[in-house]
Amino acid sequence: MGAMEHVRYLVENIGPRGSTTPEEAEAARYASDVLAREGLNPVIEPFTSARSAWKPYALFSFLALVGEILFLAAGRWGALLAFILAAVSLVSVLLELAFRPNPIRFVLPKGRSQNVVARIAPKGEVRERVVLMGHLDTHRTPLVFSSVGWLKLFTSLVPLGLVSAVVLALLFLAGAFLTLPALKIASLPFALVILGILLITVQADLTPYTPGANDNASGAGVVLSIAAELARSPLENTEVWAVLSGCEEVGCYGAEAFARAHKGELGRAIWIVLDSVGGKGAGPAYITSETFLLTSRSDGELLALADRVASSHPELGAYSRAFRGAYTEGAIGVKHGFRVLTLVGLRKDGLLPGWHRLSDNLENLDPETVEKTEKFVRELLREIDVRASGSPRS
Image (cartoon, rainbow, N blue to C red; front, side, top):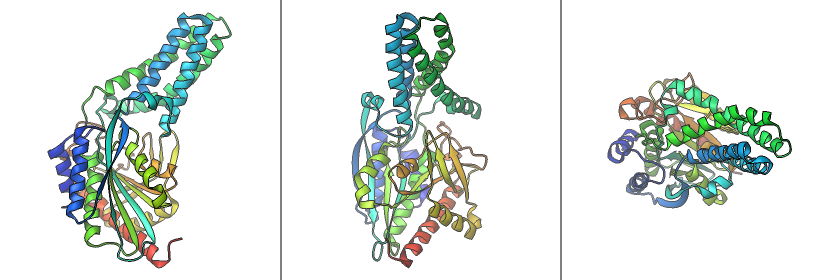
């Protein structure tokens, strides 16, 4: 079966696959069955995950607004308590944006999810290891992703919200020592920004899940197709781990669980992520860096190999881009010290087609882009294997 057959099954037979939902679990079973039919021995690895990408930020906003009410109504002790709430929520949200444990994560609703993992041994000695990862879950369809205009407003509002939270915390702290009505008046515009973020985050969790043809049945389909080919014709000295991950959309919980479980075995393995690789108007695009709160940079040697493949195969139309304002599972690979390269089907204007919209369906997917991306990854794996075969792995 080719990548597009897997994409069609995920989208048409299973449908939207929200994180920790039965549909996401069904997608994992499908991936496991596909890999098993190819003679591999896939393992389903369960883990616990948050259910929502938006609740951490809703809780952050709510706590900051509770602090504002205390600040306005409860005197100096209220201002001091408001400062504590604002500081805890602000630190928590910054840690959340960096994929780190934090107090907010402890109180979020949780669910069970799973990764599907299959190792594909090479013909000869293992001199290199590659993790090839694509997530199975799909996102909700918030208003702020419904158009380019809304998305631009949202990307401006997020840093403004963080700045507003910092200013509010400082005003609350000042109010614990100074009785100045001007401090309360000054807090109101910043509280309105936080209120806007709260409304956006609450609305997001009331929306349906996207069918996720591009994000990310396309990436998962390519991983399954390449895994099947490698099962029949392994590389010479490169062991490939095919990973169909869960719960990427709520903070990369699946990638985090996989990295923690296997870091000892994988060492400094190559970590290749395929995410949203079939949008119309996009090409096989590999990212030089991704910036969410922190910036995660792709491995320099892998970028050089990708440049070489792009140059050697101009018919694929591959190109590099920086990625800002969002995250991929590549950020988790960088966090854990792997050598990372991520493919995201960004258009040359930097936009991601159909991102978190109900229109992310088969009609708006470009099979040619999926095919070109698969060919690009295959060539990249061959280049990695040739390099590995030329000298023993250190």
